[in-house]
Image 1 (cartoon, rainbow, N blue to C red):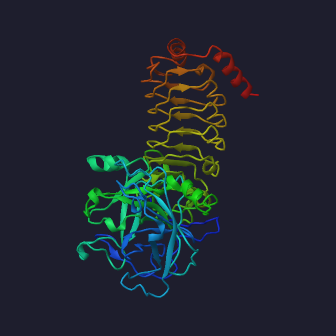
Image 2 (image 1 turned 90 degrees about the vertical axis):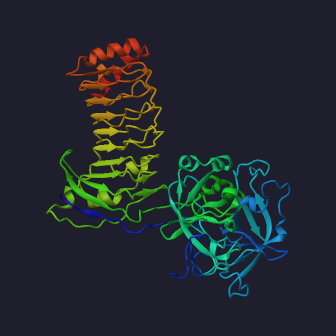
Image 3 (image 1 turned 180 degrees about the horizontal axis):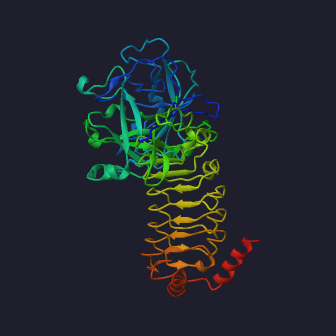
Length: 533
């Protein structure tokens, strides 16, 4: 077997706004099952206290010089009619040991207002919109021990990612009281489906704007309410979740905890504060992308097969420097395929570095990887592609111009996704297209002129869908020798040069069984004829 190991450098984050957030400013070497932090390790941690008795009651996160982010239930709990008054709340910023309030560099910050989200309803069970913004009386000065966390992009995926929770919450060691020094625990979020199955209580109090997280033997506890679920992207930490509710408020090691999904509320946060999150861009480079390069004799290609640890959960994922060595006498020119399989890739990564390293990179497979969004800007950087395969993902929508820059593409596949609509101009720029694979999607129609400029098309695999209308004249495609429309609503046939039905026979059945635009024949023939001149 021919083998090359490909690795990227660490994640890089670039922020176009002026706020330098989510950075730890000092060197560093919560929760049940957690470890004690070191001073300054999480400088956005902002414990909250009652002014009347100086008792710690909730956590919060610094997000700017004048605002903290916390949970609504900390200030207006279930059953309450009236919210807590802000003049009864303060925070000790930069503190490490709560038993030493005279700690050097600590700022006592008084809260001037508490903005509870308007959707927070204390008279029902659900914890939807369990999020609150605290405005401080005075702006604070950032130090090595007082820093803001970053707000995430509004379209960031909060499911199935690893994060860190920090707090002074209850623990086994304190016998029902909170910790004096903060602990942190690393836990993972799970899908909404996995969270709710078999957990009736969580199902009753959860909403679509929440997520579950937890790890066996590790779990945030009651005193951590309002604290953050922090995700590290590159050198910066983003507050992606807010601790909302645990079952019965108890501290159980093996139970999941509900978090408010912060990306769902970013637009609200920016409206209610002076924080500008609109200019933020994230250039994410996967921290540890490892690929095995070998010759795939079945498909006659020399490919990179990525490890399942591949994760790409935010926009603008970017693969950076590539290192590795060949042990079989091959060179970088032999690599023509990148195959990402069973990873987690919400977005298509930026493969610019792969283009530079592998001059014959022509085939991209992103398979069984939960891919949801395909952006033209990413594909435009790979105009040399001949094969593009998105088998077995979560794609629901394709922009009409998403493939416009791939004029060399010969095979396009998006089998087993969730696509319902084929945009009419989707393939118009793919003048060299020879094969399309779209089966096992809930596609309902093939629009007129869909194959307008695809006169080189040889095979169309479009079966096992929900097609009930076809406005295409396939006889106008001179090189087509296989048309698979099996298991559709208006037709269940396959035609090919060696099949019992020819393409002409298939078209006759389409004309009789599927609704066809009365002008299709003239229109499509005209399009094909014009494309030859």
